[in-house]
Length: 107
Image (cartoon, rainbow, N blue to C red; front, side, top):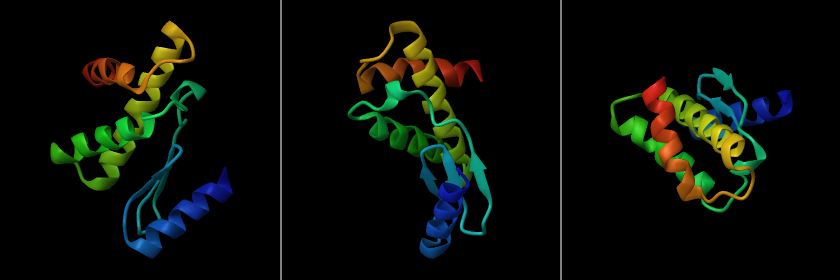
């Protein structure tokens, strides 16, 4: 909610870094993006590691940190939603990788 967004912006300002937290991405200058964080299927061990890898992958391709965090978060959430629709709860973090690839190729 609004409190989370304010908290994430404060952390971004304090540490002068782009911060991603449960669908909220904040820039140190106060800009804030909010998106659906993805379904509860993403609450599986290693899912956050996949999210970090997606963000790092976009950054490695030349995106600035803010854009990489927004795109990484969106593709991660969308991949989780697609996987939950198809197989239900209980998937493994490694199951997200093919879905991430598909989401990126469809975007």
